[in-house]
Length: 226
Image (cartoon, rainbow, N blue to C red):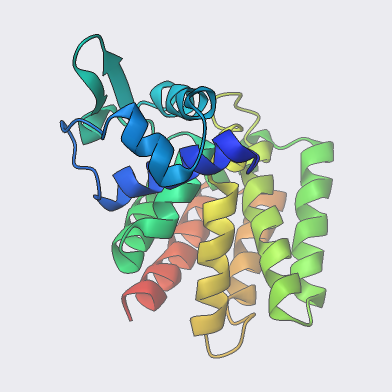
């Protein structure tokens, strides 16, 4: 995550402004002098911040034109910083459902893969996360364990293309898990459903793991929509 030093703070403020719609796609940002005055920073700091946003696909600079906000399809939302910032300014329900759609596409099949491909090492890590869920006594303990459980499943897939997804969505997933826990009757209301996923993975029941994860995510969707 970008540190909130001076250029990082300006990058964050500009990025969230773009993501929120303060600066519409295809429009030109205010001139450098105006931005420098608005943020109270030097030209060097501003340009460093703009380079950061360029690398994330939000803006592009053109000679004699200025810095243009790129169209939405060009934004690299599969960037950990950008995804986190977007989650802070997007309509909460809309963002939660988009993240949920992503989870529903990935996690049932990740659970299936984990059942087939887990090693003794990844199973131990998953077992520890599940045990932490069982012993959780507070919402915070539960959410940390729940996040570890879902990230552990991605790690247990033994698929190098899936494993980076965990660190990418970790911060936004943790926020969603916290919201779900608070909306449940009790914070650990879904423990049995998580246990069903874990048991199927441990027993190498690939179909069972996929079905159990789909059922768990179905409960999550109902809480979001409810």
